[in-house]
Every structure is written in structure tokens, then in C-alpha cells.
Amino acid sequence: MIASSHMIVNRNGGFLIILLGIALICSHPFFARADTCKVPPPISAIDPPGFYDDPDGYSEAIKPLHGFIERVNQAADSGDKACLLELLNDWARTNALMAPIKGYQGYYERSWAGTDFAFALLRFFPQSKKDAPVVPPAISRWLIDIAASTRDANAINRLHNNLVYWAGLDLAATGALTKRSDLIDAGIARAREGIKDIQRNGTLQRELKRGDRALHYHNFALIPLVFTAELAQAQGVDLYSENNGAIRRLANLVISAVLDQNSFSAYTSTPQQLFPWTFAGDLAWMEPYQARFQDPRLVAVIAQRRPFINPRLGGDVTAAWSTHRI
Image 1 (cartoon, rainbow, N blue to C red):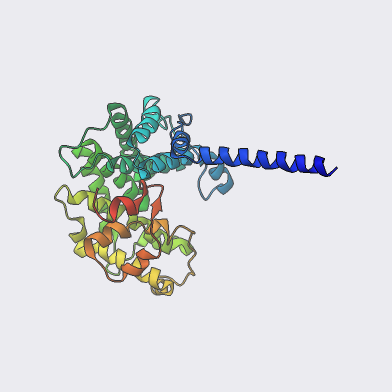
Image 2 (image 1 turned 30 degrees about the vertical axis):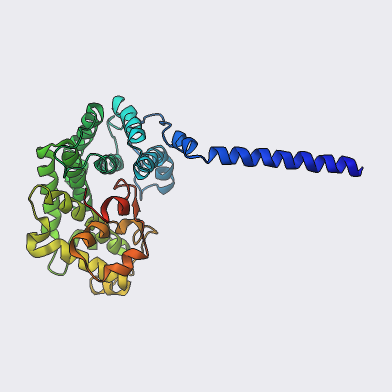
């Protein structure tokens, strides 16, 4: 009986050793890369229900796209250019995401995806280097198609709010990546719409109407304005100075709220609700902003939150923007 038990222990121990060996092998970077670079089936249409209209339906419908974006960003974050190009090229060849959209949320999601892909690629094809290698043609054409559809989307253009500024960032980032000055100019024009909307006290009237999400949407609107301003600098356009430094007024409003959320009560009496990512990944704009302006208030704020990971901005924004500009 004792011998039998001893044999069972040995067998179980051997089995555990085998499992441990498999786990160690699969954790090797080669296998991790193989998993990341396994291209998921391209999605022809992106047309989820509205984020607020049907939260559960939205979450389920958007999973395939968000899963692909995560793989794209993992490839960029690991510096694996070949993997990044493999992922995007496979989707580009099928003209993914470009089927007609019946609702409205899909236009936002396609715009954000195009922005993310462009920023991921700009880490390897920087706009600041005139002799940078050219993005593969299939990917370039696909991202330009996404940007053009965003530019022409009445579902976005009629809103005149943060989604227009985000659309502008898609245009500017894709234009910078593909050397398309018409897209860059269209992106800057949309950013200027947002800059013009910033009031003397730093608020955005349309975002104040968002009730208990007003603070969240002020921060959300600031993200594309800052990144478009950074891209515009390479074109000799100083968006930070326009409307008497409006972007910095909005940034100061948000910084004050990060330091003391009660400060936002000066603009609305409605108690504010934040998403878990509002004062986390959505503060990614602070990386290029701090690199440019060196605001002493941001030193501790940024240090506590790094790295800033954002699925609309190419993944690890800290790695891409903290020490240099794309």
C-alpha cells in the first residue's frame, strides 16, 4: 500500500514537472511572439450598437476589433516591426472594417482604430525623418481609406464635439505617416474647430452638457487636440498658440481636476463620475505635453501613472513620447 502510494506521488510529481516544463517553454519570447503575430480573421464591418444605448451588446460586438488592436499594440510595444506589419497587412489586403455602417458607433470605432494603427506605425516610420522607409503600399492605402471615410462621415462631422477632434487626429496621424498633406490639413482644420470652442475659462460648452461625465469628456476631448498639435508642429503649425493658448487653458482645467476633482465644481454643480481609465490611460496626453512644456505640477502625476497605455494611441504612449516625439 505504501509502495503504491509512493508510485502515485512519483507519477504526479513527474506530471507536474512535465507541466512546468511546458509552461516554461511556452513562456519563451518565441512562443509569445507567435501568439501575438497570429493574425485573427479580418472583420469586414464594424457596426456595434451604441456604447451607451446597449452596453452589453456593444462590449460583445467590439471584442474582435479590440482583440486585434491589442495584438497590434503589443507588437509595437515589443519593437517587433515585422509582426506589426504582418498583422496590419493581412487586414489591409481584405479592406477590413470598410463595409457600410448602418448605425453610428462604427464610425467612431473605425476612426479610433485608424488612429491607433497610424500611431503604432509612426514608432517605426517617424514623420520627423524625411528619409524614413515607406509604409507598405497595402497598409498605406487601407489607412488612407479609413481616414477618408472618417473625413467624409456625416455621423461624425455633424456633432461638432470631441469626436470631430478625434476624427482630426485620425486624419493628421494617417497623413503624417503616409506623407499626405491634404489629410494633415484636414486634421488640423478639425483640431482648430475644437481649439475655437475652448472658452476663456478652459471649458468646452458641448462637453459641459454631458452631465456627470462632463469632466471625463473634457479630458477625452483634450487628448486628440494635444496629439494633433504635436503632429502639426512638424508642419510648422503652432496649434498651442491659437485662440490665445486655448489648448493650454483646457489642459490647466484638467490638471487642476486631476489634482483636486472638486475644482471642476466651479463649472457645473453636477457631481462627476469618471471611468476607471479617465485619470489613467486617458491622461496619456500628458507625456508629449510635459515633454514640451515641463509643467512642475505634472511630475508626480505622471510618475504615479506610468506607463500610459492607450488603445487609441498605439499602445504604450510613455515609450513612444516621453523622451522623443514621433
